[in-house]
Image (cartoon, rainbow, N blue to C red; front, side):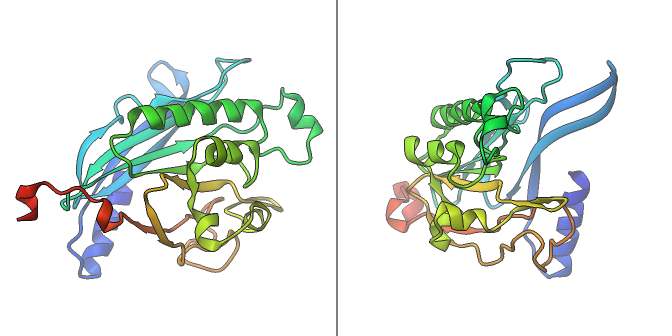
Length: 251
């Protein structure tokens, strides 16, 4: 992550830009060889532009959303990272970054359904834990929830977050896509599989502008071939009439 930030700043300077960013790392899981030696570690990150003041983050203790029933010691920990940002214009924005588990192979749904990603009861339990955490910890009405949900558009996980918790699924909203149409736009690939697993959810108060730089997995572009996922690149804004500015700032 330090290397990513270093390269980012070098690229910005080369482009003649003075913007600077701070990276926050949220550790999730470690596969240990010994108590002091890790074989493999996982985690999440948020890179915030220094134009924002970060007044809270949970990097020291990311929120565990993992649903555990069997083989608890082998279950990979899933977390939700949270960063609360304050903009110089007077509004706050909460960023939540997460990564849900794969559907459990121990559930009946895994073996009987036509689709699996987002249909696992363990995934739905994690989505509920995630949504509860967002509602409890957010510090403003403006928030985004991003990450690899391992869930298809229209799956029980996606429907729960949209229909029961009231979150906006930004990509399909901006593109005017039905769940079936969104499924046909893959964000990840493995061997010959192509799936739409990554999502950007938000509060209804945010106004989404576009995803114009987002490319489907396998489509030619700047990120083609770099990962088994492609980034969702979006722009949004806080409507001006919703920004609360202190009198001293307004002067």
